[in-house]
Image (cartoon, rainbow, N blue to C red; front, side, top):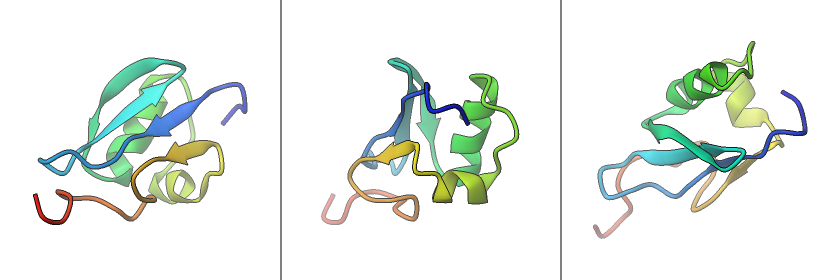
Length: 75
């Protein structure tokens, strides 16, 4: 993945999905690492799988890391 792309995965929503944004554009609501990898592929960032997504230092994970999915506790 090129370092020129800014990728942000936001905290889990009440439904458990996490909004994914690349270069300021919201790509969708991901429910797991496979979804994030697919959104990035559609954005032109080819060749990433779920493991790559979890380990990438180019993705900014807000409200928990790549293993945090599901509704926030207490919601």
